[in-house]
Length: 389
Image 1: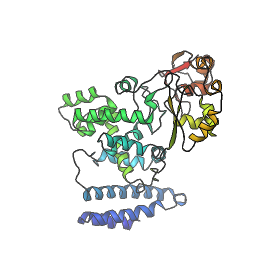
Image 2: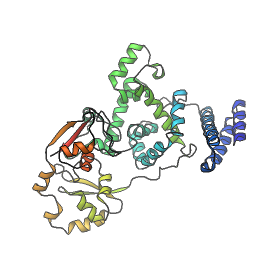
Image 3: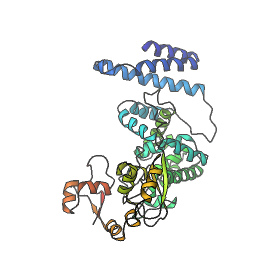
């Protein structure tokens, strides 16, 4: 496909950006249909370099074709720092980005709808891709939680409630609305989307101080913590891919929108019971109600809008209505068992989940569930683990 690339480059240099983009698309379509398993190591190396070069040329052609943006649009700058992450996400990090992109299909339509209601650009829907990998149960080392990674104080400022029974930072819709308001405020304070995103990641005060002390409001000229310096280019790279995932070798998961029914329940309903009523697993109910912390609808919020798999509300109502009230809702004694007090354990060097679980006479499974440890058994010294008694 090198001849397509060379021809596209000639058209680009001659100013025919439309033809250059078309030839890049032909080249990418052919390359992405090739059988990598039959290639030798040197052929794979050449293949990857050719794809990266074509992708860069395709982007440059697009920016020449559509250069103008209004002030309200999110600017998609293409520079070395963005290119670094674009190459990573389409190369060594592709397996991770594929997973994030697949998850985003469940939420992306909702993200964009909420953002548009606040007159914010669609590109901000990529923030949860970088923040959490679009995983509602994600918890950072700083104890930031949910798709948009709110720490507790910031979540409270933007109206997200947390108590023993639920944590609205994990609620996809409520947290998205809170994030939209926060991003809008940051944009108004800094007058620039890149600085607003840097502040979302590194904190308003830190970015404001950097702008003041360094005498520039150009994000690309600021010296910030490395995580924040990388954060904005990562989001730009993700937004570029999301505009045309097929061109970059990804499937388009936008049609996998998470659909569900909602029924109001008037007492604390055990998720196991809800799952039996509709013929799905308890995990399915938990996935649809990530804000709930104790695998039952909160007893302090009645009625509670319980989310069920799409098309299952009628089955739930039919079976649930036939139960006695004593069987429908958890008793005071059962709630008391879920209301047990917790202790916070700070991980020490040499600790692992098994030794901590044995010490506190709990299971590793419960320990991971309480602390939303979804990937492996990795913990680190200084980490705080919540343990219920």
